[in-house]
Amino acid sequence: MAEAENFYQNFFASLVDGVLVISADLRVTKVNQAAEEIFQRSRSSFEGESLSKLFPDQPNLIDKARQSITTSASYHHVEGIGYNKSTNGRFPVNLTFSPFMKGDHKNTAGIILIQDTSLLKELQENSQQTENLSTLSILTTGMAHEIRNPLSGIRGSAQLLLKELKNNDHRKYMEIVIEEVDRINRLIKKMINLTHPILNDFKPTNIHEVLEEIITLEKETLKKKEGTFVQIYDPSIPTIKANKDELKQVFLNLVKNAVEASSKGGRVQISTQYNNNYTFREKQNTLSQHNIVIKITDYGLGMDNSTMKKLFTPFFSTKKRGTGLGMAVSLKIIENHNGTIKVTSEKNIGTVIQVFLPIHK
Ligand SMILES: Nc1ncnc2c1ncn2[C@@H]1O[C@H](COP(=O)(O)OP(=O)(O)OP(=O)(O)O)[C@@H](O)[C@H]1O
Ligand SMILES: [Mg+2]
Image (cartoon, rainbow, N blue to C red; front, side):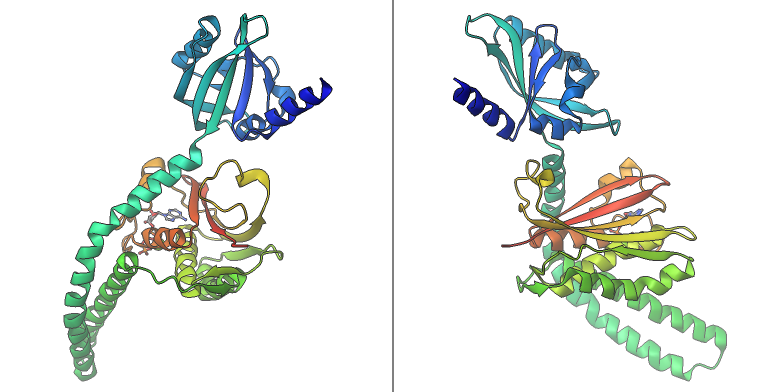
C-alpha cells in the first residue's frame, strides 16, 4: 500500500503539466511541483486559496470548475489567464477540468490540469512573422541587384566630382549624396541578409569572443553618452555550433539598439548563462534542454505594447534613420540556429532581450 502511495506521489510530482486539486467550494487543496513553477509560488501559499484568485475576472472559467464537480463533466482546452501574485503579472494558460472520482463515486472535488502557453504563443507569433518574409524574399533578391549596380555608378561619379569641387557648400552637397548612397547600400545588404537562404556552415564558436568583439565596436558610441558596458559572463559556457559572422550580426544589432535606447550615463549590461536546469524544461517544446542565454539589458527608452508587437516586423522603426530590419534579421538568424529571442520591456524603464541558443551534446 505504501508503495502504491509512493508511486502516485512520484507520478503527481513528475507531471509536466501543473495540477490543482480543488474542493467543492472551489479552493485549492493540493498542487504539484509544476503548478508551483507555473505560478511561481510555494505549495503552502496555495492551500485554501480560492480559484478566482488564481484566475481572476474569469467567471466562465470558475463556472466550468464548478460544473465539472457538480455534474461530473470534463472540459478540455479551455483558454484562460493565470495570475502570478509575486510579479503581479498575468500569463496565458490552457486548462482541462475533470471531476475527481473518489472510491465511493461521489464527487466532492475537481482536478485542473494547467499548461503555461506563454512561450508557445510567443514562438507562434514570431514564426508567423518569419513566414511573411518568403514573399519579401522573391522581391528583394531581384530588386537588390537592380539597385546596387546603378548605385555604385552614382557613388563613383560623386566621389570623382567631390575631388574637383572647391566650393565648400557644393562639397557638402556631394558628401550628402555619398552618405545617402552608403545608407541605401547598407539597407539593401540587410534586406539580402534577411531573405537569403542561410548556409548552415556551423563551427564551434565561443560566444564570449563574439560579444567582446561587438562591445569593442560599440564602446565609443556608448562612451559619448557617458555610458558603460557591464559584462557578467558565465565561465562554464561551452562553445556552441554556430556561424560566427551571423551571430556577430545579431549581437551587433541588439547591442546597437540597447546603446541607441540608452539615455545619458546609461548602463548596458550583457550577461551570459548556461542553462541545464528545470526552469526551461517544462516550458519548451522546441528549445533544447541544454541551452545558453545571452541577456542584453538597457535602462533606456523601453517600449510600449504596440511597439513590442511590431518589433520583429521588417521595416518597422521608430528611428529617424532606422531601416527597421535589425530585429527581423536577428530573429531569422537565431531561429536558423534553432534558438529563440525573448523580449521584455517597459516604457521609460528599459528593455531586456534574451537570446536562447541550444547546445548540442
Ligand atoms: N533596446 C531597445 N529599446 C527600445 N526600443 C527598441 C529596442 N530595440 C528595438 N527597439 C524598437 O524596435 C524598433 C525596431 O528595431 P530594429 O533594430 O529592427 O530597427 P531599427 O533599430 O529601428 O533600425 P536599424 O536596426 O536598421 O538601425 C526600433 O526602431 C525601436 O523602436
Ligand atoms: Mg536596430
